[in-house]
Image (cartoon, rainbow, N blue to C red):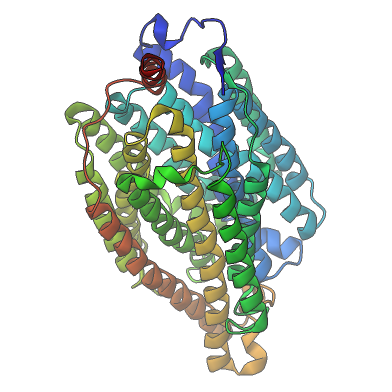
Length: 527
């Protein structure tokens, strides 16, 4: 296998370490693209009740509009990460943004829920490239010891995109001359700006390696994960958890993933190099990332529905109510990043973040239809602070532990498993929510009325309900939402257990590109 570098680039590490200003310029387009990619997952949150009403969708479709994008993003992340180790990272990011633009345009012009779901898949493929490649490019340019200051800013962008999305979506839905379609269209100009900024500011040395991509492994991984995620979203209302369909889909998904592991262990350039899991740090951060994804996405995606359905807030107010979580995440992510760069210690923030996140989940498991906004804000801020300290620094810990030529794979593995956890959380807990609402409504109003609130029936139009039934619907959604956080709390605690066993290692002072040069020189000397 031969590796041939392209002509020297003015920003190539060999020409000297990039200055703080140069790095920020290079990251400008990356941050805009990252913000747009994250926004795609979250901007629809407060718009979903309106979208579902306009397109005559159901609670199942409600969940799938979120899940389909997460599913596509999750399934394609490892492939994007592998291609980043082989081809131009800059070109790949621009390609992913281009796909995102196409998906956004289709979604914004969709006539029905079926085409909307297809467009969300296209958006997800583009977003998968952006989320995986952003951290890979950062690691290529910046040493882990200095990464904290930039990762803190990036974590803040991730956090703002994650939680500001519902606010932006709410404002768009409540603005009569815009409407919910702009929740999708708003990302288009930002994506185009990002492509232009990346073309002008991002200059990385391109190393082309003459290898074949393991397309069979990519297909098996994507198919196996997709089968399990589809099962987790359908079980419980389309068919029973203990049923023939469950057995077929679970066994089928596991067989596909087993075949993927077999293929990955035998090809020269696997999509997910299995040897990276020999690192205890990579294995534990992967486990923690799955758990964080399940707990965080599974719980918070349905908060917007709780704000609007149980508390009777408008989409805009529901978006504003998420601000405490944004601020908590933004502050903790930025402060932790600066402290890691200053002192070089990082495990403390993983442990503290996981502990605070667990506490936030437990606090949110106490909410009901009468919970006051100030108290709710405190609970959400606690959750945001925990996530801010934990999520981004899991990637930093893994990147610091692998050789430079595996940076892309390690980063994409963590992003992949976090997204997979999120998709499982949204689909499985969405099914739990739908079933719980249905059973609570049935208890109060009888079998016929149970369909008003959940299962595959349409999400209720609150304005059309008489006051006594409205109160029952609001309480049913509040109870079901609080139970999601009660499920999420022990999952978050398991993430805490995982990070406790991670061994802290000193952070590298060389960037990914510098480490790659050093490793290549060492290999040449050996031969």
